[in-house]
Length: 264
Image (cartoon, rainbow, N blue to C red):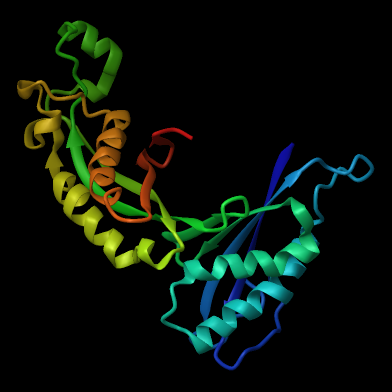
């Protein structure tokens, strides 16, 4: 069993328009103040032993552009205030005939930071993801180790003055498509702003955040511990809502180092 993912970029233009050949930028091509979207299609199964293909990616492109893009365009024109999460079951139903039973998931990227994912195995639930940023400094120092051991384990990160990062954080929140489970981007942003960004942004974590204060028995502010505490704080808020559950939180310390909690 393998999973093949294909991202199809497209633009929704006022008055329609189906021209363009630059798939890397989006087909149809952008005109005027158009809208740019991406739809990532995941298919699962076993590849054809003769061709090595699971699905011809051209077939995925054609299916999205001929069947999916018109649905998005119609929603933009007729229901611009609609929750886009509700469109994913319709997109899956439209793509199923040409792509077959191997169609496994859709990820609709509405902005570079905001996406909605649905598995065809659980078509009544979507996963919302939104990215945020905060800046903070920290020092990695274990009180149970000697100063020499701390320098050996943590290296430059043990500098007594600390050092900083521009962190990125992305909660993944499961939401029921039942209207009672609705969660708007604005509502998610408000929760993250109050309980994560306001808690950590422009702080020296060891000195300003009790959960990481060594004098209060706090945790070492590693990216692993930051991710876990962010998850616990956000889940404590959102999981109390009907039809909403925080699946995980991912924190990037740099573009090369990230931690997801809980791991999936």
